[in-house]
Length: 431
Image 1 (cartoon, helix red, strand yellow):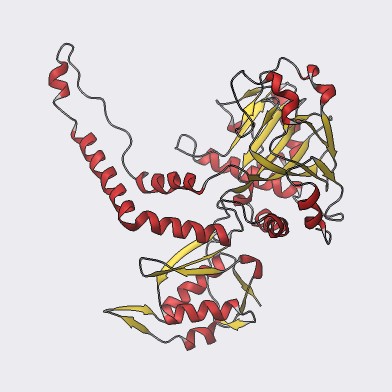
Image 2: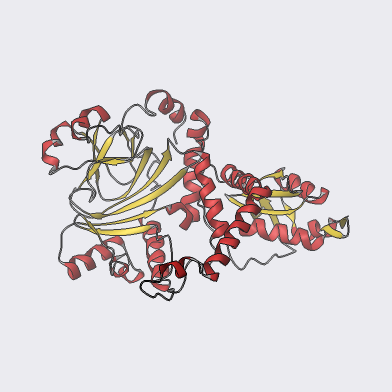
């Protein structure tokens, strides 16, 4: 961003007023449409392979004002379309309808490129306003639709909207302007809320209009009502949003769900005889009893220290991810070359801390791992953080075995594991 941009933004714009910033990256597209299409097509292929399995889809498609729930995967962007324009042409040809929209949340976790760029983008903002309490994420909107399918709404997030393709038009209204359309007795300022309007025509003239072309950035505060309006042709945007009301305690549900997810959730039908309900009441199914026991055991493990440990690790992920918790997975198939020199990627935010469990938690780029605490591990992390190039073979040769009790806590092989992990996390790169 231009020098002084964030200081001026924090003073004059942040949480105050909508704004369009023209060509903020001086000719470079922040979110290239080719990259957005690639991750959309990859997600479609993934959904096709896992259709029927429990999954957080994280994306959906709308035709007209209806979100499609059946046979929706075939309507999503696919590799064979070649581009969003190709996808749009296929939908128009096959569906013969006007108005379609593709949405994806947490786009940054599917693209190391977008993750890195959003991290760089928010770094200057957070220097001015502080690191948000717990939630920063991104999403993607692509389509050719006359207006946002779910209508005029507000979200409790401040939104940075990057235009990747086409001309984007957003209509916005200050919170108080549309209060007559809010259900009586509802205070919608600090909640997500959609208005039930018959038509945009009744409020269109009152709207603040933001328009942006590829390379432009649109911003609006979370207390503004908003709705996209079509400009003719396919429009692709990628947004970074900062949750204004999110509590760290909301993350506890993710920790609990991860612990309990392995528990069997489906039970067979129970034999039933009409009129014999008392007998049925006294015969608690063994599978239900077993599931309850395992749930209780999982919760006990969390209460007995596991929950504190998970929150410590989540905090490491959050700090190293620059506010993002959903991040790209580690690279696969990493093999260390002992003759190669590696250096730390400064923006990976390599951090570590001692855990109450006696382990050392280490995180970079929003990914976390634990190893037995040792002098060798701390020394290695400090050395890598100091910068410079380090030949893999030399680092391995210097590793001295450390024992704790009857176990080995540091060795040449443990160092190899640590280095391999950091390379897979994209925290170490060839010098």
